[in-house]
Length: 220
Image 1 (cartoon, one colour):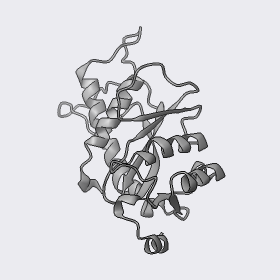
Image 2 (cartoon, one colour):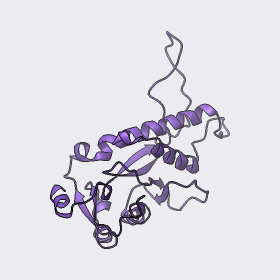
Image 3 (spheres, helix red, strand yellow):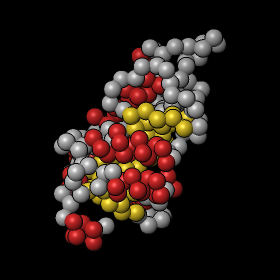
Image 4 (cartoon, rainbow, N blue to C red):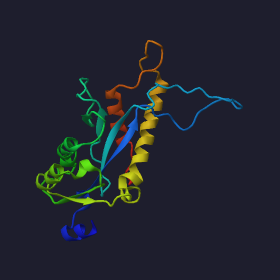
C-alpha cells in the first residue's frame, strides 16, 4: 500500500477502507439498574438475541465517512419504505457477496461527498474476505472506478484495518444507545403473548444512519 501511495500520490480523500461487521437486532447495554442487594435484575428483551444483519461501513483517510450499507438476511427486498441515508441489500445468509460488492461500488464508493472518485485515481483497502476479491469485483473496481486495491495480510485485520481498530466498536455503541432509547420509549409493537417485537427494518435502517452521523471525526 505504501508503494502504491508513493507511486500515485493519492490524496487522503481518495484512500478508503471498507469493512463488514455483524450487528444483532437485540442490543442490550452492558449496564443495568437495580436496588442495592438485588440478586437478579429484570431485563426487557425482544427475544431476538441471535437475529442479526451485516453493516458495511466505509471511511476515507481524510476522516470522511461514506454511506453505510445494510445487508438483511432474507431472499427478497423488503417492501416497506426506508428512510434515506443507508443502502439496502439482501442475502439469504445476510453476508456480503459479489453482487453486493458491485452495489457497494456503485452506490457508496462512487458517491464520494467531493463529487465522486470515479475520474480520480484512488485506493481502497480491503481484507481477504472472498467477496472482496472475486474476479468480477476486482475488474469492476479497477476499470469502472479507476481504483487500485490494497489487500491486508491474513490475521492482521485487528491491527491494520482502520475500521476494525477505530470505528466498528464506536458504531455499535451508538447503535446500542439508540436501541436502549427505543426500548425505553415503549413505542415498539407487542406479540400476542405481550412480548416486545423486534424493531422493524426501517427502524434499523434509520438507527444505522443516525449512528454513523453521531460518530465524530475524532473517531478516526
